[in-house]
Amino acid sequence: MEPLVAAGTQFMREVNAAAVLTRLRAEPSMSVSALAKAVGLSRQAVTRALNALAEEGLIEFGSLDRDSTRAGRPAQLVRFRAEAGHVLGVSISPQDLRVAVADLCGTVVASEAVQFGAHPSADEVVRTLLSTIERTLAAAGRTSLWFASIGTPGIVDPACGVIKLIPSMPGLTGDVLLNRLKEPLGCPIYLDNDVKLATQGERRPDAERREDSLVMLHWGERVGAGIVLNGELYRGASNDAGDIGFLDLFEDGGSPRSRHPHGLGPFEDRVGGEEIVRQATAAAGRAGDGEFLSRVEAAGERAFEAVLAAFADGTPAAVEAIDVVARRFAKGISVIRAILNPRLVVIGGPMARCGEPLLAALRRHLAGEPLDQPVLEVSALQQDAVVHGALLHSLDEIERTRFGLVRTPLSS
Image 1: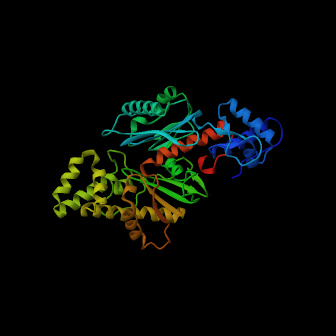
Image 2: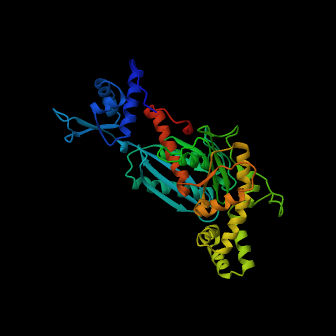
Image 3: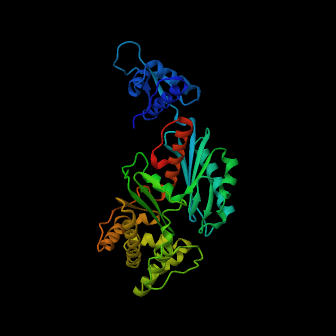
């Protein structure tokens, strides 16, 4: 999209400054003349915009362009000061915490990931989050933090920063995170469902994947979906569209537990991490694979990760388990296809580590469906999708509120 320009009064200056800023952010540096030509404004209008931006600390005038082939005095170069501020992206899950800091061009300057123990308390999560953010900002050489976006599991109301339902981390229900982080961060904070932010991360501006009709499926201990229709993130009437973990599709082999200790929905109960471990250990028991059983038992709370590693190594019990749950998961994809008919389904979360062999199993189990099925791909960002989506949202908010730039539909 070409940057907007305008003629007339204060609005003209604001819009023209936004156009100049948009162009400068896309280039290492430019001369005033080249900038004027690129945005279609007079040199005088560009100079006024640059002076206003310089007063805000967003641009700086640099050295002369001595490499220029033009005659006369070398032109002075101008650059956008991406280091003038930073944005924060955070991903919180029952298993781990991921934090990243980016400059105003979106370049990640520092990041850190921390593993949680089994079933961390809300206080432990918040304390770990605050200390991790502090270390990450220090590593970034912090100037100032302008915006923070945080992704968590569950049903989140982003308008007021309240988590309505989070069965996997019930201590974070309500406005716990917002209240504990507001003062230490000292900047606006946005809270949203992790899968919705991951979907935004997958469609970041520099990604090849810019489909206007896709479903991003987070598949791990829990299952959720981010839905993009006609280029826009679809949230639903209650902002919880995509909570497919609560689908109840199966009657064969016994019904799911109605009161799962970790709050899993019926679909998650049949395709999630716990079930994958159960299927793998059962398969190993039938095959007499004691070595694999010992490995899974030794992994303790990381048994799911141990099974995924064994799948990558071709361990028969793990391969059999993944195939069983892939057959069930394919039923969920077929339901999504029948209702939404997306062009693309992206598999994210821990199961994305299984790569092409997992996609091959899903395609095989979908082959008998009467409707044409969507293209299947694994997440390009995998475990970093949520935190990158959070960074992208933070940058979108900076562009909207401080730069006066137009946001893309998915960012809204």
